[in-house]
Structures are given as structure tokens and as C-alpha cells.
Length: 130
Image: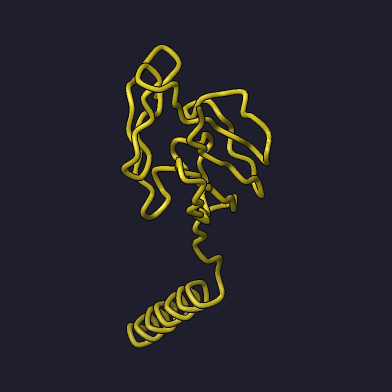
């Protein structure tokens, strides 16, 4: 009787191991993000740097934080982060009327980076403007 229990337990453990191995081999794989977007930074010399981002971000700021090599900073305000410096270039409105504008698929965005929704396939531009 004990021999049958031991054999049964061994067979059960082998089956569980095989099922686990099959799951890891054929099961769902991790994804980088459900949305694929492009973020383009256009500096004061009209030079463009592009970042392709796969993200699950709901808003642009998080996607920008995930973009490898994209650096930005600014001041936190009532409506979120007001960009002042992008990739080392500062736009100073009080000095010369310069600012960073946000474009979505070639049109002015309606929101700042903290409230601009991220939609799969969109191209977001951060443009040095005067």
C-alpha cells in the first residue's frame, strides 16, 4: 500500500513539473507596453531627436520618463509640470519669449504633459517655440 502512495506522489509531482514547464515555455510572455508611441524633441535649431517608446503610460509625462535618454525638468504648478529644460536646452519665456510646446500628431496639444493622454500610434512633439 505504501509503495502505491509513493508512486502516486512521484507521478503527481512529475505531472505538476511538466505542466509548469509547459506554461513557462508556451504561456503568455511579458510585454514592454501595450502602446507604441514616438516622442520627438525639436530644439531651437529645429533639430529633431526621436524616441520610440512602448508604454502602458496613461499620460505623456510617464511615457517621457520611460524614454531612454530623454531628459527634462521644470517647475511643478497648479496644472502639473511646466517644462523649462529639455535635453539640456532651457526655454525662458521671461527672457526671450521661448517655451516648450506640446504637439500631438502635428497639432497643438490641449494639455500639459501631466494631463496629455497617451494613445497608441500617436506622435508627440516637444517643440522649442517663440
